[in-house]
Image (tube, rainbow, N blue to C red):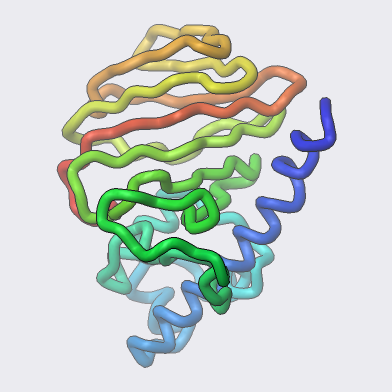
Length: 208
């Protein structure tokens, strides 16, 4: 494993988790909700919310969906256009509705395996979303969203195991895929090196 892979597997997830916690705390405060009140609305424990806000827990997609519904926000609004509290870069280009700069990618760490998702779409309110998913060795998707639309992707680094229904495919760099979102599916990395997947999905639920 090279040095760049080690950075992806350790430093980036820790930074992203802290950013998520700060964003959740701000959204909760803006709605004048205590941790207990938000926990009751979302159907999760107050202890879990406290851990997320302190940057000590990597919530699953299912937990994030419950929290965003309780707060009345889009899933990616937990992230914003840059880490919480970070000012725009001094040399940042003007904002655009159809361009997202690499330095402005919202990033989220999901689940116990520290799977990292970076939003690449310039906007989070369109019907087409795409993101970069980084799976550390042993990483796997948890609580994936099943629903209308389609999903597809391209393996840009390493190898991954894609399960769609009863079918499993071992995919290498350069391999691509597409399937209906209504079919149960998962993505995992059973190999020794990190993997990256460009993930694309058509979105019917505007809250995703």
